Length: 164
Image 1: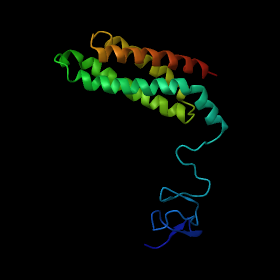
Image 2 (image 1 turned 90 degrees about the horizontal axis):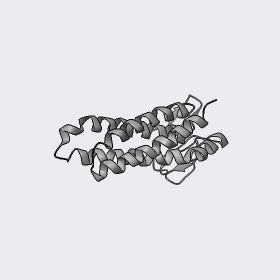
Image 3 (image 1 turned 60 degrees about the vertical axis):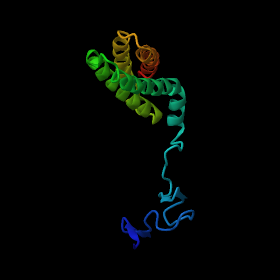
């Protein structure tokens, strides 16, 4: 495997070309991969703005993450219940809530300018999901409803704090 030209300016060896642990012409190796000089890898700090936003929003990120997990677990449990047909709307809302919570947490973690707006949508999805879960007396539904209510509160606070 030959060298690849980097925008026609200099040869760049492809990742995983038997160079693990060595600094290459384009930057240091991390986990066997070559990253360009100045590249930001997952987990590195991007800057003070993102770092301070993430710290400010950490309670909401955590609530969203816990809520998404509770929703996914509740879906699995609901699908095993004998009255699964009565839970179709619940499962649909659980799926939406889990997806919105996951995306909200991701946008907050990266300091996205849309995080506040999506947090408002997330609060609504969590409220709707909690109301539906509360209709069922199963422990998994009641537990999920509690997580959804808590997440809705955190998302409303975050959404209000992020308004201009």
